[in-house]
Length: 92
Length: 371
Ligand code: SF4
Ligand code: SF4
Image (cartoon, rainbow over all chains, first blue to last red; front, side, top):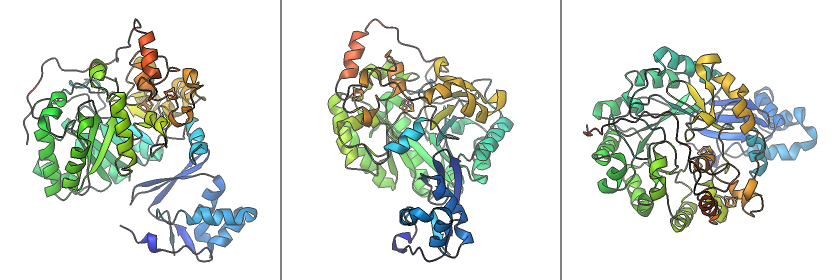
């Protein structure tokens, strides 16, 4: 299937939402569905969704996070990093 | 409280679109399983035609419903079956369909194997012909196994084997696991509910308390066995089973029946749980605006379960199981692991049990031949 377990998440590198992923907005945030591995992931905050949507416009995850939630940087690095394992985001 | 409980509270208020949408393509079926949740048998003359079916898929895609569960009846009986599922997967709406397998011959298996975003679930209700055929009819086990052989030979990949847990089948858990392993398939176990024709057999077929405890333990040791969140009433026994652990009816779950009626869940095909028809203003309108779904999304009343220390784990169980055994929705689940459901049932002996509304059962049983 995928090699992502061996992929290391580096928040100073550029990442983006996988092209295989669709996002559906919900009151609590969004659902992310990966059409390839058929995983459904719950994104539990709107800020996280905004960050994911903007990832490709920034040269690092850190910058994308700081543009939305500068005061909660570490928490969101963790939240974004957790999405590597299900291939929701990928390095570019 | 589990890590998921805040999310669950949000789910209880409903989602923009369902996560688990079941669409039954037809009430026609060549089998006559005694526990059929939709009382299927005869085709309904008002069933959606091909154009209506495709328009519904377009709406589903627009609502960003990522995958649908197709069932019946036997969905493969529809002549436009392949046309319908191809229309869905072409728009990236994944399809998982449930079948008795009788229509999967070598040729159909090859056709199925060539389609992306497709999952197949073949039903058996026993790990041998005797146990299975008692429920699904003579020849049903052999036909299902043959279908599995065909899928394997066509290199379909990992399909699912779906089993309803009855007093008999629950004694064969290890055998089901072995069959799944034999095919490289995934095992999926679901709960017997007193829905459809199941209302007539539930009393004698639903698992005993002791069996349910064993099942819980077996499942806890096997997180890879799928359950479609069926057994969350057993989460009251200890750590929660994998899943959302809530009744999703009208919140994350719903059913579209073959004639376009929308029900809160596949197990409550009854006037009382009908939210509307997609032929009126479309599915989205029913999902977002119907009075029934609005009321189901209000915080639940724990009723008799309010004082139970396990309410957070079990949420009082399954609405369908309560309704079709004649309990109030605020009563404990009839299979409450602490026996409170049985007590409630005993206290209501004289109550009228609601009959599932539309009944498409055939009057005469038909012999099954394997392909
Ligand atoms: S009393 Fe209600 S909440 Fe408690 S275990 Fe029984 S059904 Fe579940
Ligand atoms: S009524 Fe029962 S089967 Fe239907 S969603 Fe609720 S718990 Fe599940």
